[in-house]
Length: 125
Image (spheres, rainbow, N blue to C red):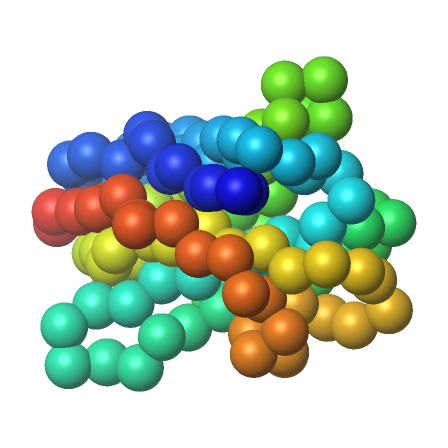
């Protein structure tokens, strides 16, 4: 059974950095299209960054130039490097994965059938 486990969240001041990790167990992460999503209280879930099974990357406009998604196939781990963090980046961050490629995971979260439990990111001003 494939499982996703996020880590790396925490509390930082505005302008700081964090790196989130999503460890994939029970399967080969590189065969999945994967993404990072976030949700804060009272707001809808928002796609942040994604990488499909053939390596194509997409970002939400709100994080372009500040966040970088990457995947280490040897470690079966997905990362999200977050720089220049802003208070509005505060949210629970979730890792998600789905089989196959040919679609943008950010635009098609319904095709991602594996979700982690999330890691909290809090950015103070």
